[in-house]
Image (cartoon, rainbow, N blue to C red):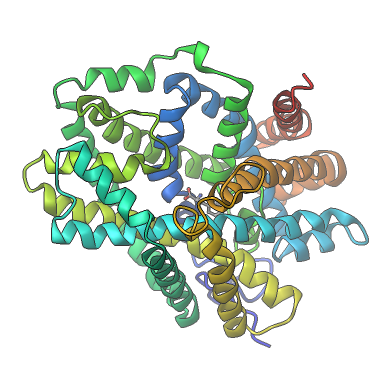
Length: 464
Ligand code: PHE
């Protein structure tokens, strides 16, 4: 049975811990991990959540969650993946035989389904916007026009399904063809272009009359905007954005080389991810205020505001095409890592070959995701717990499963796996002199990370 991964593999070099699936270089690790982290979470979700949760105050809460929880879980996952050599289920079975910790991996597969269910739809909107920006139909500074363009798109059930399935077919085909190397290389070259474009849009946005209000909103905190729900949303966002709490980073960790410095890698990825989000915020908020949009408009923020910004700049139509193409590419990098979690489950747990695993994953997602795709049309009135399928998938993954997964993982690392193992794993068998960093990580993941997650949960349930 073929057990390869879509990621970049070469036969192990000397010094690596096993033969087979590995990233080729430290840079490869960085770009693949960053490719998973940077996606719609940065360009679509971060701005709209910041917008609807009070701006700067939310940003601060988000930063705290990222520092005390997000990075720590990322380090923990990558460490366990490399030590346990397999996806989350296989690795945890190996590291804790006979115990139920592998359930973290099982919950992760469910999270991957839930996230992909709505993520593939949003990616579909981005694909549609590439076409729309080429044809110029959304190039208008009139909020009314861009709003109508978006609402009529999402209210069309056939288009919604079609777009989602195209996205799934494209992502599945990339995995099937095994050209992830190509994708990785493309992402590596295009990521700087995405950054450059974000900077350009940011400058345009900042130089619009009335831009200051947007900057104030993003950077001057008004703490009265914070509620218990804000904490859960910010915590969920930091899990979502860093791709942690569901086994994705653990699976990637299993492809890491023995000499990869995990704490440094995780910190770099987190900082880069944060930078992309802030750039997106700077590109969007000044324009939101300048054009009289509302920052709290929710998931549609990107799709109604960005076109208006482009419409007001010279050569805006070309930049808009580029912007949505690059957003699509960023989303594909993230989706490949999400699919990887499900594919390795079929492949490593159920023993199916890789091709069949990919086909089953894409087909399963097409069915599961269609409920989210139809959430603004046919199924708009079908609600569970007061939420449409789109919102339910989103809420369950980011606000329930991923934080719970993170809690389990932190407890496992800090209280079960323990200091000697952690020290050995993070110092690369004593070859790195990073005792202090390890001590800080150990203290945080054992006490602070789990405590913060529990407090946020209790607080949300009004038990605190
Ligand atoms: N981090 C990705 C983004 O920001 C989404 C993602 C979540 C990817 C979980 C993998 C796992 O778009």
